[in-house]
Image (cartoon, rainbow, N blue to C red; front, side, top):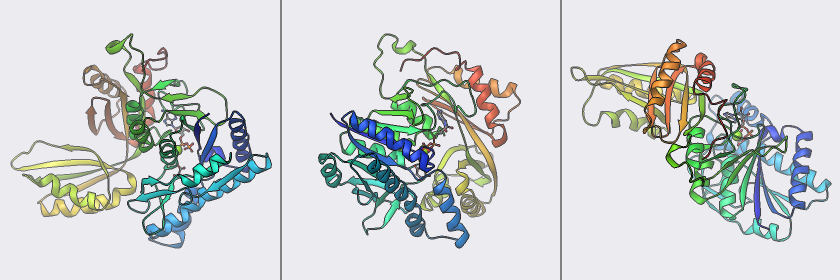
Length: 412
Ligand code: ADP
Ligand code: ASP
Ligand code: MG
């Protein structure tokens, strides 16, 4: 039997009782005969707590030391899970990211996996051991531990599944799969039994935090089949892979779900002199400071001046406002910002072929009196930027107006 990679998120290992329950699941999977690699996140809110501690002892903690600190959360979980497995008579060894051969490049706090040296894991698997790997971390060229960014244990799991040619990667979390909207906001949301990697990646990038988008993209690139399931039940969950139903081709249902994100701020440069190179002058300093920009809108120039608005995550708001302010000043304009925004997206394939989706979305939001600040569209999504306090209401309204609750199980 082949290798299966399982990943348990923070809520699945939040307490000693949870860890024992995970050990039981792992024991059963091992009994079924699979070679098992288990990736674990830090317990519950440990990563948040450690970050808060760092900010208590220092006004500007160094990124290297933050990684040194945060990586300990996952290290605790792997050791504890190994102990719980030993208690159940299961041979298991825990490894930190560096011990598992995860090599990374990139900045502290947002490392990217470059290579995985699998020899040690393979040797342990050959011995019949369960290999438990700390998620969210690797080692850089100078031998320092580097974390992969928040939610990065999903990426660890999928990367390991690719490197070990695993049969599949199972992501265990606190919901029974991927739903047509966040089930915490829309209780009538439906589980999606099968979803294509492209749609799942779009849902993840747009804010459905059940899977990290980098993990979905890695899975698509290396052909890893991903299953999203609950660690608290035996329900079937969601499978992420290309569908093969050829009966309905272009007539199949296109809408996957309604996704939201509350981590949005907007910066607007007003009345700036525009010409060739203006966009680069605005966005290069942001890129150099590691600020990622999402939706960008430029107004048509009027008498040589125009407005440029863009969104960033809230964590980057202050830096982006300062950097954009400097550029706006040098281009004869001003800057303004709005910190507390959110985004709501309608995601599904073939949006551009069916222009009705955007119009329907605007009509639904308009009817409810929800103001739209910015819009972005592509062939797979329509996104509206809204005031943060209206986002949950918008998700509920759109889920209802697009009739997602009553929908039959959809084909991919
Ligand atoms: P873990 O700690 O296991 O990594 P996360 O908190 O990162 O879990 O992700 C699971 C959460 O994602 C769920 O509790 C749910 O509220 C949220 N979520 C957001 N959108 C969706 C969606 N479309 N389908 C399922 N869950 C979603
Ligand atoms: N513990 C890390 C976080 O909270 C990584 C993860 O859980 O995936 O972001
Ligand atoms: Mg997660």
